[in-house]
Image (cartoon, rainbow, N blue to C red):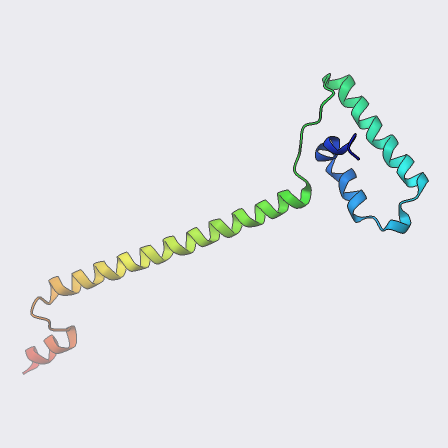
Length: 116
Protein backbone atom coordinates (compact mmCIF):
# COMPACT_ATOMS: atom_id res chain seq x y z
CA UNK A 1 0.00 0.00 0.00
CA UNK A 2 3.00 2.30 0.16
CA UNK A 3 2.77 2.79 -3.60
CA UNK A 4 -0.89 3.76 -3.60
CA UNK A 5 -1.31 5.13 -0.07
CA UNK A 6 -1.22 8.75 -1.16
CA UNK A 7 -3.90 8.11 -3.76
CA UNK A 8 -6.13 6.66 -1.05
CA UNK A 9 -6.18 10.13 0.51
CA UNK A 10 -7.89 11.32 -2.66
CA UNK A 11 -10.02 8.26 -3.34
CA UNK A 12 -11.48 7.94 0.11
CA UNK A 13 -14.18 5.52 -1.06
CA UNK A 14 -11.52 3.02 -2.12
CA UNK A 15 -9.72 3.46 1.18
CA UNK A 16 -12.97 3.01 3.08
CA UNK A 17 -13.71 -0.18 1.16
CA UNK A 18 -10.39 -1.64 2.24
CA UNK A 19 -10.97 -0.62 5.83
CA UNK A 20 -14.61 -1.74 6.04
CA UNK A 21 -14.64 -4.91 3.99
CA UNK A 22 -14.55 -8.19 5.87
CA UNK A 23 -11.29 -10.08 5.47
CA UNK A 24 -13.07 -13.09 3.98
CA UNK A 25 -14.54 -10.94 1.20
CA UNK A 26 -11.20 -9.48 0.13
CA UNK A 27 -10.39 -12.07 -2.48
CA UNK A 28 -7.81 -11.95 -5.24
CA UNK A 29 -10.57 -11.10 -7.72
CA UNK A 30 -11.89 -8.33 -5.47
CA UNK A 31 -8.39 -6.88 -5.10
CA UNK A 32 -7.85 -7.05 -8.87
CA UNK A 33 -11.10 -5.15 -9.44
CA UNK A 34 -10.10 -2.64 -6.75
CA UNK A 35 -6.67 -2.18 -8.35
CA UNK A 36 -8.20 -1.73 -11.82
CA UNK A 37 -10.55 0.93 -10.42
CA UNK A 38 -7.68 2.76 -8.75
CA UNK A 39 -5.50 2.54 -11.84
CA UNK A 40 -8.33 3.75 -14.05
CA UNK A 41 -8.97 6.75 -11.83
CA UNK A 42 -5.29 7.68 -11.73
CA UNK A 43 -5.01 7.40 -15.52
CA UNK A 44 -8.15 9.49 -15.98
CA UNK A 45 -6.75 12.23 -13.74
CA UNK A 46 -3.44 12.14 -15.59
CA UNK A 47 -5.25 12.45 -18.92
CA UNK A 48 -7.82 15.09 -17.92
CA UNK A 49 -5.85 17.16 -15.43
CA UNK A 50 -2.28 16.31 -16.35
CA UNK A 51 -1.25 15.55 -12.80
CA UNK A 52 0.43 12.47 -11.45
CA UNK A 53 0.15 13.32 -7.77
CA UNK A 54 -2.96 12.99 -5.62
CA UNK A 55 -4.83 15.79 -3.91
CA UNK A 56 -6.02 14.73 -0.50
CA UNK A 57 -9.76 14.98 0.08
CA UNK A 58 -11.85 14.54 3.17
CA UNK A 59 -14.06 11.49 3.35
CA UNK A 60 -17.84 11.77 3.58
CA UNK A 61 -17.56 10.63 7.20
CA UNK A 62 -15.04 13.36 8.00
CA UNK A 63 -17.17 16.00 6.29
CA UNK A 64 -20.26 14.87 8.20
CA UNK A 65 -18.34 14.89 11.49
CA UNK A 66 -17.06 18.41 10.83
CA UNK A 67 -20.57 19.61 9.92
CA UNK A 68 -21.94 18.15 13.16
CA UNK A 69 -19.15 19.80 15.16
CA UNK A 70 -19.84 23.14 13.47
CA UNK A 71 -23.57 22.83 14.14
CA UNK A 72 -22.86 22.11 17.81
CA UNK A 73 -20.49 25.10 17.99
CA UNK A 74 -23.16 27.37 16.45
CA UNK A 75 -25.81 26.02 18.83
CA UNK A 76 -23.57 26.60 21.87
CA UNK A 77 -22.75 30.13 20.70
CA UNK A 78 -26.45 30.88 20.18
CA UNK A 79 -27.30 29.64 23.68
CA UNK A 80 -24.52 31.76 25.18
CA UNK A 81 -25.69 34.82 23.21
CA UNK A 82 -29.27 34.27 24.38
CA UNK A 83 -28.07 34.10 27.99
CA UNK A 84 -26.09 37.35 27.56
CA UNK A 85 -29.19 39.02 26.11
CA UNK A 86 -31.39 37.72 28.95
CA UNK A 87 -28.86 38.96 31.53
CA UNK A 88 -28.69 42.37 29.85
CA UNK A 89 -32.50 42.65 29.83
CA UNK A 90 -32.64 41.66 33.50
CA UNK A 91 -30.03 44.32 34.33
CA UNK A 92 -32.00 46.96 32.40
CA UNK A 93 -35.21 45.94 34.16
CA UNK A 94 -33.47 46.27 37.53
CA UNK A 95 -32.19 49.75 36.61
CA UNK A 96 -35.65 50.78 35.39
CA UNK A 97 -37.17 49.51 38.65
CA UNK A 98 -34.68 51.65 40.63
CA UNK A 99 -35.47 54.73 38.52
CA UNK A 100 -39.23 54.20 38.79
CA UNK A 101 -39.05 53.65 42.55
CA UNK A 102 -35.95 55.43 43.89
CA UNK A 103 -37.00 55.01 47.55
CA UNK A 104 -37.16 51.22 47.14
CA UNK A 105 -40.95 50.96 46.93
CA UNK A 106 -42.49 48.27 44.83
CA UNK A 107 -45.56 48.80 42.75
CA UNK A 108 -47.75 47.04 45.30
CA UNK A 109 -46.35 49.03 48.25
CA UNK A 110 -46.80 52.31 46.37
CA UNK A 111 -50.42 51.47 45.65
CA UNK A 112 -51.02 50.62 49.32
CA UNK A 113 -49.46 53.91 50.43
CA UNK A 114 -51.65 55.90 48.04
CA UNK A 115 -54.75 54.06 49.26
CA UNK A 116 -54.08 55.05 52.90
